[in-house]
Every structure is written in C-alpha cells, then in structure tokens.
Length: 178
Image 1: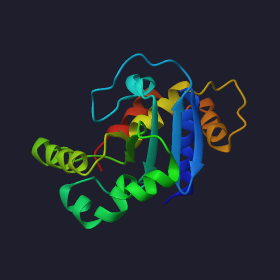
Image 2: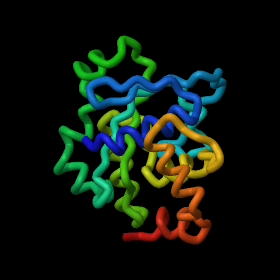
Image 3: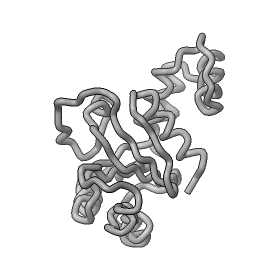
C-alpha cells in the first residue's frame, strides 16, 4: 500500500465533505450531508461522489497497471481483501458500508473493460473510483490563494499557483494513454 496514495484519497474525501477514518490501511468514509439519492453507476465520477452515504475504501496504487482480467486474477486475494467478511467486520459493525476500490484505471477496450468490471462486481466490489477522477477533483477544488493544513493539498496548491496544471497540461497528464 502506498501511504502517499492513501493520503491523496483521504484528502479527496475530506474535501468532498466526508468524515474519514483510516483503519488498518482502509479508509472508512461517511458523508456529512444528507444524501437522498442512490448511486447506480459502478464507476463513480466526481459529480456523483456526494451520492455515497458511507463506505469502506481500499486504495490500490498500482499506477503502472490497468485492472485487466489477468491482473485481477493474479492479485485476487489482495484486491478482494475488502470483501472478506472477517476484515469487513473488523472495520465496521454495520452492513450498509459500500465496498469501494480506488484503482489507477480500467482497460480501454470495451470487451476487456466489461470483463474486468464483471469480475470486480462478481467478487463483491460495489463501486470503483479511478485515480484520475480523484486527482482532477482535488486540483479543481484547491484554491491557489488559500493555505491548507495538509501537506498533500499544499503541494497541489503550490503547483496550481505556478500554473503546472494549465488546461492543456492537465488534460495530457490525466487522460493520455500510457
């Protein structure tokens, strides 16, 4: 587990009005607002983050890998640790917490992407959030004129202030295939 990636995801949820607790390498998140809506999508986009009521989040920071069926098969026990009933119960005592993975990316090919999504769903994952979604949301929410207590947010603020996230660079950074 990457401490830096965990911190980025934690700050993402905090900036989106969630209470966040870090426990045994997982994030336990609870929305501080009244929800009133259910989220139907498996891949959660930044506009729908506020529809999450509460969840257990596992951050998988394998930034050089796409979550292809072969990656999911080869790392099955680590990926699906969040769905283990014993681990789940050690984190929360409420069945209403969604099991959410944060992953670097899914395959671009529709058939392979659909197969990966099916494997994740079939093994108990209820939602995923992609790292580019998290990073782009953080960059958008950071005000370059404010000071932040978080080292992570302060670094983003400084980079944003010095125009390292121009629209063109930002799009290339997040969405160019590697």
